[in-house]
Amino acid sequence: MERKKVGLVLSSGAARGLAHVGVLEVLEKNGIPIDMIAGTSIGAIVGAAYAAGKSIDEIAKTATGLSLMKMMTLADFTVPTSGFIKGKRIDGWLKSLIGNMDFADLKIPFTCLATDISTGKEVVIKQGPVAAAVRASASMPVIFTPARWQGNYLFDGALVEPIPVRAAREMGADIVIAVNVVPYMGSRNKKADTGDTKTRKEPNVFSIMVRMIYIMGYQAALAGLREADVVITPEVGHILPGSFNRARECILQGKRAARHALPAIKKLLEA
Image (cartoon, rainbow, N blue to C red; front, side, top):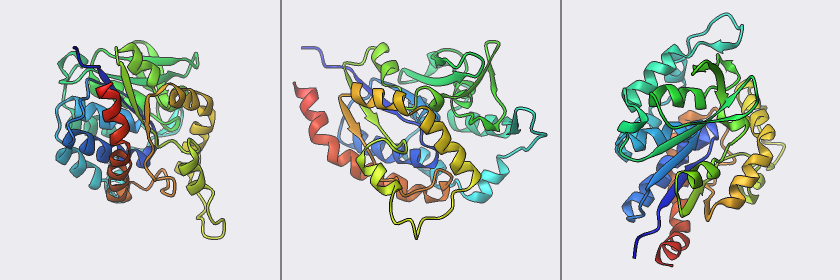
């Protein structure tokens, strides 16, 4: 009997998305097959690196090296006509992480989602240079200038498809495992986001922008969660979207959530 194909969906979520690395580690160590990956924004970055053949250790090393100083070196500021950061340095960083690969060269089939700023529609990218596609998927409006792709201007896929379950289904997945680190999605993250108001810090511009994006994509995210077979929700709601320096904590929470989901995943594979 032929084994069911497993699609892994990695949501957007800025720094919180570093939890995806921990999820991947647990799935790999427990022999859970990953036949295809669909990702948006930070989920596209992590997913593309893994699909390109990068080891968990390599991806984790990159993630834990994202200090504030490192992030600042990647910010090539420009006169803000369409965004504050040109993104050329980000392009170079993505190529160093993923390599100069086309989608056809990837070891695992991969798709990422972006938003056409002119039409407001989702753009499913599954061919061409991978690093350029990921740059489009993770280009936060206002912060970054738009990415040019086949004559169109693209921004962060989280605007329209934060949890791209449908894309994984279209790739042929029989079982979809969705990793959700999107704010407001699920009781765990909601509880963490609405904690003690006396101790909560005032959000910075980056955090406000991220939250605006997820509020806009709320209904699409809900639809994605409903269509997934298993949802893994790491406890990262207390981590601000810009806190890339908390990568180790995010990865740890990803591991914990993935271990909790293992029985449900194995049951689906055995059915």
